[in-house]
Length: 224
Length: 228
Image 1 (cartoon, rainbow over the protein chains, first blue to last red):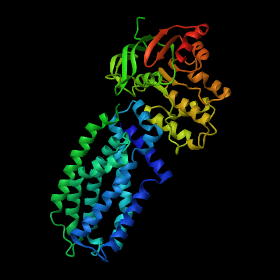
Image 2 (cartoon, rainbow over the protein chains, first blue to last red; image 1 turned 90 degrees about the vertical axis):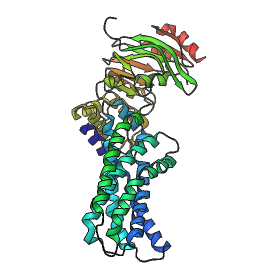
Image 3 (cartoon, helix red, strand yellow; image 1 turned 180 degrees about the vertical axis):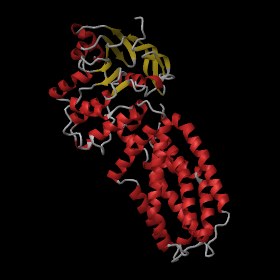
Image 4 (cartoon, each protein chain N blue to C red; image 1 turned 180 degrees about the horizontal axis):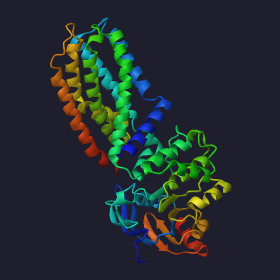
């Protein structure tokens, strides 16, 4: 299973490096939204729950772009059939796709979070960076697991671009609430890590549940 | 007839919604034999190949491939089936070699086999070029290399020589032609050529079996009636 998952992941990353269709679009979208908020809210800086909300909603919408494209090469170039013909566990496909999306999200955040700090965030990020990284990582794992599942489900439908946000957004509400709530005190003037353990625990639980659920369901999504 | 048949169909049915794509297909193909599938567009030829490839489920009837009953035991025969359909199943942004190495990894095949099949289809010098830069004939040759990369026991071929010039078609003969040491199911619109290389001919009209018997090229008229 590991061999197959790594083969698919390697192929996806090679195609992304050559086409640059997902990560640059996600990053550019995020920075554009931050600029829009900067002028739309007519404020130079944000803090607390507003800052947290703007960051996570923007990252979530950028995630939708990545999820939309996760199975595009498979859908348009017969890759799904290539996978179905191979003697591999379907879990390998899920692990590879979720792994690719996780990497895309982490790369997105390498650009988006500093851009957010420069364009909108009032308090400094540096002092609470370790806590923020833990929140981002746990939220990304959940988004990647659900995103891979939704992308596989939507890939065989004609209205893929509509199905992805309609399915993804409700499913990730818990992880976005947890990530937003955990981030809020980090972005406040006082900068405390209030209830951080509780929110991290909730996100870890969400990650475990949705990874297991996705593994269980993935077999059925790729079959005829 | 003592061992398991390479392919055994008994009343195979497959629908697209209410429309039957295949109905009542019954035949037995022995290991090493070639089944030629004939019929006009929409007769169900490609659907039959996709069912045998485990890409589509049969909706009724019994389908045995190498002794494994589909769809329940599809996992047993995946990896022993080679499929060359209308789509090459190759990623345009990857080179031919990268595509074959990707499939080699999925099938647990060594990279020396990749070089072997690249050479066999005459693309060893174009192996580093992205698939999008190859001609249609080259892509078809590469797709044939992909289909036989893992040394399948059953090769499913849907008009495999489409888009190939005579020299390229001749190049593929040892891999996918009559001389290849495997069981083949061949969809072809070349009636005489198809009959010359098959042991059993299946005639389909609107998804229904018109005949499934050994035919000689001299009996091509019976096949041509399918296209009337």
